[in-house]
Amino acid sequence: MAEGIRARALTKRYPKSKTGPPALAGVDLEIPPGRVFGLIGRNGAGKTTFVRICATQLTPTSGELTVLGLDAVREASEVRTRIACVPQESRPLYFVTSRQLVDLYLRMRGADRTAAALRAKEVLKELELTEVADKLVSHLSGGMRRRVMVAMVLASDAEVLFLDEPTTGLDPVARRDVWSAIRRVARDNRTVVLTTHYLDEAEALSHELALLEGGRVVLEGRPADLRGRVRQPWRVTVPTEFPLEELRSYGTPSPVEGGYLVFATEPAARELAMAALQRGMRISLGPVSLEDLFLQTVGKPLTGPEEPLESEAS
Ligand SMILES: Nc1ncnc2c1ncn2[C@@H]1O[C@H](COP(=O)(O)OP(=O)(O)O)[C@@H](O)[C@H]1O
Ligand SMILES: [Mg+2]
Image (cartoon, rainbow, N blue to C red; front, side):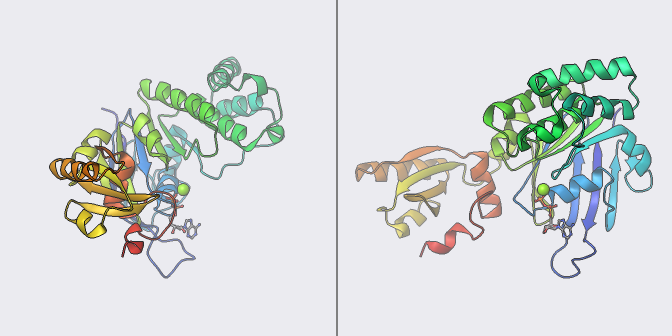
């Protein structure tokens, strides 16, 4: 039976930051093999640190970590031959073409000349990069370079692929191309660890996901199960005219653009919606999104202002 990734009480404190909280403060995580696993969280949550430790680019301060059943510290060199990684801040070689870059990478990993050339061609096509295949990497836009890096790693035969924010900065069409390539890789029974701060992406691609906050896993599970686990699974938005005190009797309000967003149980959400409609207000009512789930769990949005929304309420 294949193995995925297992972290136990994993911590990381960067040598230069002796004070303040550690980057990873005890991560326990089980990443099953052969699936896409989404790691989500705000900036600074610890996603990149976790990925870099798994990819043997960083050593943990304490705790245990196995990748494919191998110890990520003691057996790092073997782990390295079986994984591939697109780091968050990745700079490819500039003086080669896209095709040469993918080809070189595959040959460095042991593919023969014919197989490497064929795979390079296929993957560049899959990511709609055929037109730039023979352009120098240094002449490509940032988004294109990112796609070439993703193509390179997806083309490899690595058993575990780490993609750290693979679609950040890509346009919507390019994002979709990356998504379908990731899905294809997962169909080959390989493990993909994807970090993202786009919740739609995490939800569309991940079989399971974990939410990191402050270097800890605060939520974990399949997207649908996570939604089922929230205390207030309905959301209602009402305009600012609705008295805040009264809103608090229905659920948990927070100010948003033009009004309030209230999380509530289903009966309370319906009552609130009725009360607002009777006063002639425009409202919206629906089940929570993954974004809301994040807000309920962490108390602040995934992106945007750092301070909690509650603070401006009174
Ligand atoms: N090389 C580094 N040296 C010191 N601190 C770092 C370094 N890299 C990241 N950190 C800190 O570790 C924490 C986690 O960062 P990171 O893993 O990059 O989070 P994420 O990828 O979720 O944005 C942050 O507080 C960040 O400032
Ligand atoms: Mg990061």
